Image 1: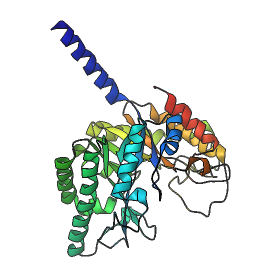
Image 2: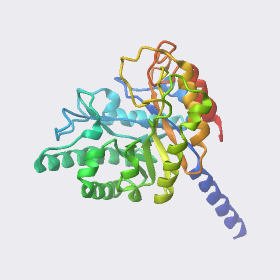
Image 3: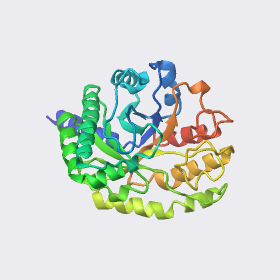
Image 4: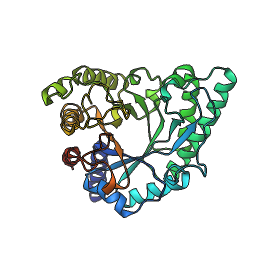
Amino acid sequence: MKKSLFIFYILLNFCAIAQQTTIKGISFVASRDSISEKHVTPLVQLNANYAAVIPFGFIERLDHPEILYNTDRQWYGETIEGTKQYIFKLQQNNINVMLKPQIWVWNGEFTGHLSMTTEEDWKLLEASYRNFILDFARLAKETNVPLLCIGTELELFIKHRPAYWTQLISEIKQVYSGKLTYAANWDEYARVPFWNQLDFIGVDAYFPISEKETPTLQEAKYGWSTWKNELKTVSRKHNKKILFTEYGYRNTDFAGKEPWHSGRERKTVNHDNQGTLLVALFEEVWQEPWMAGGFLWKWFIDHDNSGGGLNNQFTVQNKPSQLVVQYYYAIDE
């Protein structure tokens, strides 16, 4: 009996430690092709323990109610079959998965502005989104994914239809029993009405940090002051940890001014900026007790041919900042 109690005690403590493990994730970009060992090995070398797998559904316009997904016209990695293959290959290499189905508007407009003009169209959108997210919730259950993100940056949809979202979350829970989050934009998360139904407060953490072209590390750290207090307050209010469902910076001038900016008009390459801003995030926010971790935006499967010194987009692949992430992801291993 004593031996059994001792083993039970050890298992309880092991589970508690496992639950406290920081989520050190990357946002894994879907591709035309299936993935193999060589596509996952760089994540292991980065010390990542999670990957967000992101199948897209497409909407024609911001006022259009139909979501197209899992079609022959999509890349393999965006289909249900491809998503399943990605999940299994990641799991085989001890990388946990957050399944993060999300919407893409065909002309690239911001999904936070998705809003219908008639009640009929709202009902159609609700039905379409329900089918979309429940299909992937079933896949999450089938593949034993530990974390499902139920939506990404859908502020007006949530604002205008809060009762729908409350009901939808209940329906998701009937299908899937793992952890749930929602990826709220950095300027939206404090107003999301259903955090009490979820397990993590998900934030796409593109907070403005500095107006300067190339801030110092001290300046970048100071830029987190207001946001840290706000994040802590929201976490305490709901008694939930904060999860950065997306975070990252480009290696350009003024990368901390509007970190969400992804336009091609920025021509500069500023590796110091990307590295400094990431170090500031890791030093100021990452180890806070109310933080669950986060998912770096973004990571392409063809690692050897992605990013690089002349690339100034978000990925850290084959840039100096890759070593920054690798270093901080190794902490508390």
